[in-house]
Image 1: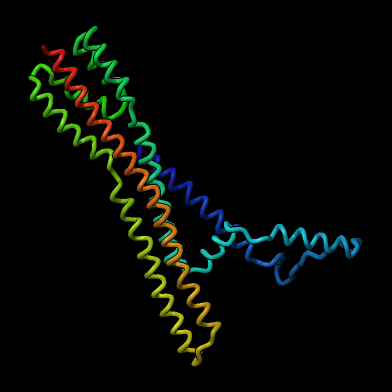
Image 2: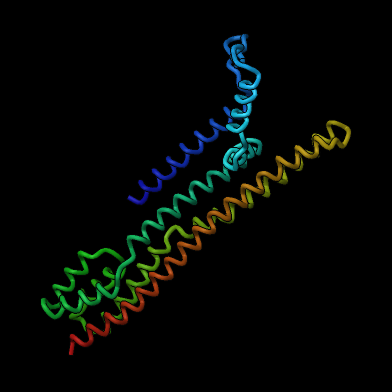
Length: 274
């Protein structure tokens, strides 16, 4: 199920990116339609007055006003596609993994106080088997840990405590799954950007050498294209770092709640065992 969710997320992001790139390419071309060797250019209606023509041109300028979203797509196209595409892939995969973790952690969150009260009531009314049934039907790592402890209740409190500690470590590992991949993409994105910058600078110096003169236009264009990869790499790293910190904070909250709940759970079992 998790793999299916990640696949659908990646497919959605890839489709969105392709549509945006196509739209940006269309906006970057002049307003003209070509058929064979003929070019048809939109011309204003001859029946319009000069004032109306100026008004229409003003409206077209407003529609073509540069937005941040359009500038972002345009700069992406101007950069080196070899590195820009890889950086975009890092963003897509990193966001997919981050969203998967966020949804998983949201589903793993449990009202521990309510669960502890329900477990205690179940033990009082139906014994350990009733409490095991309750934990089996409750989602989340806390309920799973409680079930492992109740399942070894007959073996003594020491075995129960060891079982809770061992299974708690397993649940923590599941909560932290895929975090290493997200941190990897955070580190790779700016590295790819810097690599694209270095290669772009080499290309700029090659253009200067071929021209035989240090032209400001050649230097400026080469440096601009070279630095675009670094900018996008840093943007991707910043975005993924925000998601990563949120996921880590969510995991810390769940782990702290899990530890507090297991202490109270052991107190309930010890009180029931007397």
